[in-house]
Image (cartoon, rainbow, N blue to C red; front, side):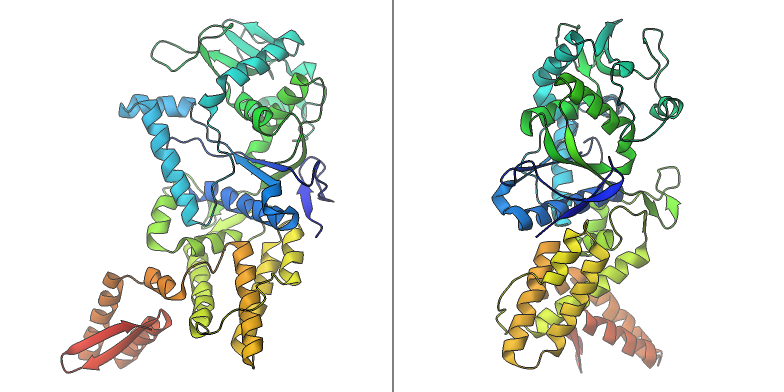
Length: 455
């Protein structure tokens, strides 16, 4: 199996060649835990969770180390604490737990390591020391700043010119900066703000430094893949490269950079001001997590993605059909359970999920049309194996349909059907019956009223 990945650094798709095939190291920039994760956060987490699954399939489960951090010290967290009166540690613990639970509902396994920034302050200060001593950083008015002109390759990842980089970074034009593009490694903490004692005074780290230090500790100075959202290319990942390369005498930092595309909601930018922020925590209360995962992977991870309710419901209907096939084949023991090469080929081609979905549809058809018991068993095994690799078809079919329609939903539809019958609207009554049947609910009209049971 040969995996190909699009490398943001080179702007082309390349054959993935790990530094050590028995120790493939991947890092994904996780969330800042001060609020609920939205569907944009989820898209990145789902896409790069699939990357980890594909790499484990290619190189062996125990030969891939997938690390994803949690940022638990940040100005937004401090502001949230001030606004709510809640202690910072309580805020970050609460939302970290919610994030992990919500991602688990989407089929995202917890990473092999999930470092929190506050656990690596000594490593961050050690990296700052190296940068100051080597002339790549300097102290100024209780701050420590990275000297961008000291790193000639700055801008290589984002391919921005100097003026664009300064504008794009939204840097504060502070009088103590030697260059407008210089960025903060360490900043002072005011009374009442969280901080740590250091040779540079009591303060806290800059955001960019956190990932560099955690990677140095967990993945080494030079590792295979760094992933994150397209919005992180500049300045975050550009700054990471500068810090890490300069802290280690010019040694390469990461071989492959991967970024997922922008997410829109119903054709518009997702924002609080528009009131169209979709929170995963709310989403998984009303639809199975697999349906949301299916929708998120329906577009190639590098492409812009438009989230919509229609797409979500279409994804749910597709999975209803797939689980319906498995329910019909419940007495057939799957044979083989090997992922078909057609699915593997799609996924090893830079996670081509649209093509993998097309292959999954072919496998579903094979399950429904197989003739002999041996063919049915082989088709079911291949179908389940493909689903497992992609993070689908993991539920019991009966449980799936129970999750899709809870008791209150069922009774509400039955009441609507009864009302339609009283109004002699038999077409609508039949439509409701068929909708319930599609969701695994069978109705029985009796003299005592309508009864129902699960198929």
